[in-house]
Image 1 (cartoon, rainbow over the protein chains, first blue to last red):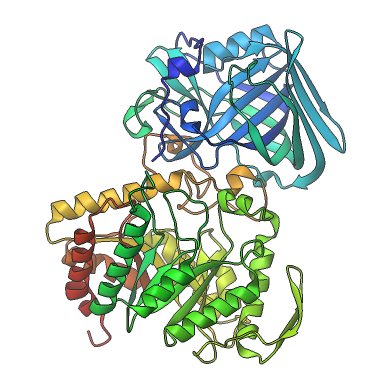
Image 2: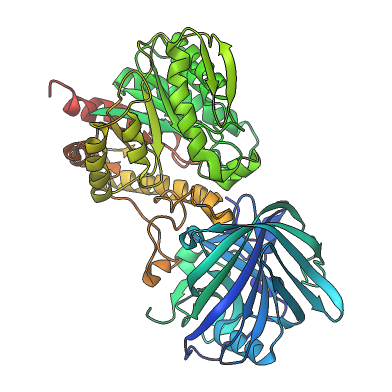
Length: 247
Length: 365
């Protein structure tokens, strides 16, 4: 069996801190999401995961962008890069990096849900026949994704997965299960290209998106819930899962 | 009640020191014993690229070897993937006919369309179209077997008139099945007069619900072949041991190892949103119906199935009686996963089952 091999502290250079579990759920209305999915080169993929998680075969990289028109912290755009994986037998993604363009949202997502994102300039464009998003960090292009050939899908055709993200928590260093629920109002599928990906800017040298799988866009209402489960990063989820709050 | 053994041919890492060869040859030894002790069918899947989970990419060859070393047990080519990027339908019909000849009319042919992105993506198959291509395959293969010459103008393939050779020895043709993973596929089977070959372990209640509707629908079917195969098979795990503690130990290891290997697979719907792949049944990680928040606990094992044939012979008889009462026609068993059970124990489990369980379900019992 393949399992993650790298300690969480080595995978995430600056772990965010969740000071307490007293989190107020937040609802984000009218969020536009774009997501591109690429197979990654599989060599040593287990080095990108902590021992609590294990990879899918093939490994799938998810690059997603949220355009949030309004929130308790104002409007913001958030780009996440996640790797498909399993926590126990559950399908999950592991957060490999994120960027955001609103400082207050950055702090709240970090303090409440352990979602560590760095500041960047983010562009999000969606038109009738195409969409794109890109990330510029200190004037350096970190990511440029183009989506073409939209095809409408039924909202039920979309399956979305929780992400596991490392954080200092009241329980110690843990993988926090970030598990928003989504009301999908509209969705479409695209053909993606990654015109530029700078792995060093993401502090993920060696990652290579080698094969385009698909992309999708959606208009959603996102419910950011209380954290329900965290996992010890060093042992499998069957032994290392801890309940934080009753659902 | 009929009994089958079911092979994914899972191979644990590292893939060296002849481990693949050992799995294949140990499996053939199990099949020889299963033939002797009274099992009815040996099934072998077709999978590609599924590291550890299944190294069974050429089941027709494996089953030919099985047929050559047995006398009575039927050989279930189940299921061949009916996706043209993987198999041309003519080649499926030809290979199956040869296997039917070499086994002296012991072939059962299962059909499927693959449920993983790992496989479909590997062949650059379009997930949106696999249901349609499967339908075209199952409607044409019986004609290739029964018509002297065959021609076709279709969506996934077309061909001018040719004699597809050889013809199978069973008349009118070997029984046809479809693998049932996603809920609802059993209805596709019923509507076409095909047997429902369960490949996802399902609990009693779920199986009963599916069976009832299958039986109703197949009465009204428009069969794709020359004969209706009104049979429902379900998938199970088998570890039979007179020592209950050992039975629990090895049986739970079997289920756990299968689940672990399964969890590496990248399911189609997970990678590629499409209406052609609904929520999968419990074979997929986190699959099945939409889950409540409490069920998202990664610390819980998912869908540990009820009704598993693990225990001493008496307990296993009880469990199978329950399946029988639901109207299941055949129970197929996985015997090992990732070599977690030593070969001698697998063989002993088969012997015990043959000696103490099968006679309880013989026609005269």
